[in-house]
Amino acid sequence: MSARGRSYRYVGRVELKAAVQPGSGGCRISSAEELDDWIARRSAAELAEPFTFVVGTDGVLRLAPRRSKHVACAGGGTVLSVGEIGFVRETGQWAVSEVSNQSTGYCPDIGSWSEVARALDDVGHERPSGFTHAVVFRRCPGCQELNIVRHGGA
Image 1 (cartoon, rainbow, N blue to C red):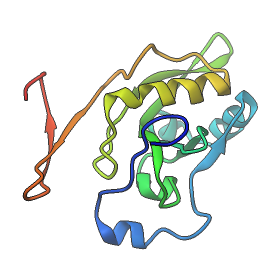
Image 2: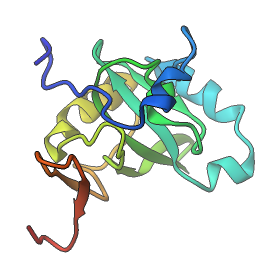
Image 3: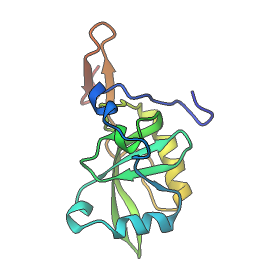
Image 4: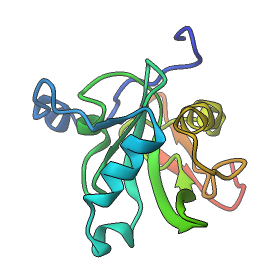
């Protein structure tokens, strides 16, 4: 546990974490202006898809292009939440259109939403009341195989 909430360490492929370069984390977004500036540098094609995001243990949102690995966006570190996020322009400002906890490298609980909400509130943009696509992960303690639970099944 961190001072803010549960933290998640990377549990994905070792070679992906080993490839992370120091200082290579996603773009730190701590204000509406920083988000606006980051989005302004994206192409129309990039804006059509969700982006990779993490909420670091400092509670700050970090963004990277969609095809980026979450472990790279996190700079190889531990996170409070992680997933994919999309934005849409509404009434002259950016708002979150979709957000998920989809990350097989970190497998965050749906309870990590509170950290995402807090980070987005700190930025000052409209957001949904929860993950628009929540993913439930199960890992077999014996073989370590990862499964995604679908349709409310166990």
